[in-house]
Amino acid sequence: MATIEFPFGKTKMELELAESRLRGVLVSGLHAYTPEADGEELVRRAMASPVGSEPLSALARGKQKVVIIASDHTRPVPSKVIIPQMLAEIRRGNPQADITILIATGCHRETTREELADKFGEKILREEKIYVHDCDDAAMLTDIGVLPSGGACIVNKLAVEADLLLAEGFIEPHFFAGYSGGRKSVLPGICSRKTVLANHCAEFIDSPSARTGILAGNPIHRDMVWAARRVGLAYIVNVVLGADKQVVYAVAGDVEQAHEAGCAFLSKYCGAFAEPSDIVISTNGGYPLDQNIYQSVKGMTAAEAAVKEGGVIIMLASADDGTGGEEFHRCMKAGKTPRGIYDEIMTRGRNETVGDQWMTQILSRILMRASVIYVSNADDDLVRDYHLIPAKTLDEAMRIAEQLIGKPDASVNAIPDGVAVMVLPKTAD
Image (cartoon, rainbow, N blue to C red):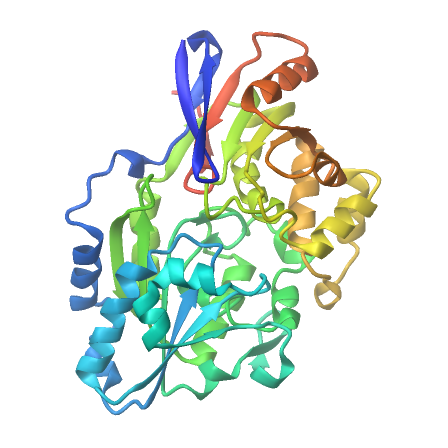
């Protein structure tokens, strides 16, 4: 028997399974990667040797208004490791700099004080200026031009008015932007809802280049890079995280060159080859990425690539925050079938995108391929609204999956962290 652990919120779930049924345990190579130093030292080294940029202390000289874009509560970025070093370097170059930390919520809910304290620590929360971006606050937004896609690029004024704009972040496989990190701090991080909607349009989400691990030819990535350059994002510090959310790699410097270096490092380790199976079990890597149903679609896309047509996906996500997207919930609930939902979305033009449409589009696409059993703390009726099958334990989900497949020895792929791995098709030798 094989025993497999799956992160779930801040806890774990276990499954015991006959070895004969297990096609594979698909994990990122980073799970076995030994970093050269601890997180703080890796960040220090990266900042000491920036890619395509002067050191941050040099960039800060003579710059009065400095803004650092930081991730919000939905991302496991180790800000306690990164931000203090960025602050120190800025003040080494300009002790009088007026620094603001701008929380990149994108279209997410506001980050709470408790979440900010958990992310940065009380010292930074007490001593630094922190502003939480609101994509609907027109008074704090300004139009800086037209994206390559044709949408208006409307961003937070604090970023536009900065003499020096910086960002922290982390790089992981992303289910339609190719990779997270880098330019994503700006778009969607600090943009208006209108801009995010234009970038996440049905046409772009449907593009075969808008997939995990793809940057070249990706129309979503192209818009994001343009926005970051246009607003003047001068320098980033991005990290790659291991299985326990620890820093295993860090890179700093130019928004494109440093990000590409980080993506190149990640791509060497995060691929996993899969033979499609009857059942695939996936997660969002636990807290904080599995707080709602919206975010958990990301882990489902890894399973989508590893499940047989007509198979079953078991998705584990605590979803303690519920939906994570009201329009996402409304559209999924209103649709009679996944096919009907998907086809209706595909009739919409770039500037007709509605809120959360991209996630609705992707979930309906997944559901056209496989049934999805959703193991969570969410209300069962809420789960059913998304055309998902509710379950409270992994054992219960397995029983349901075996019934749906129609055989007790159904083959299984296990993906303990669906947002950390790029699932690749297994080819014949």
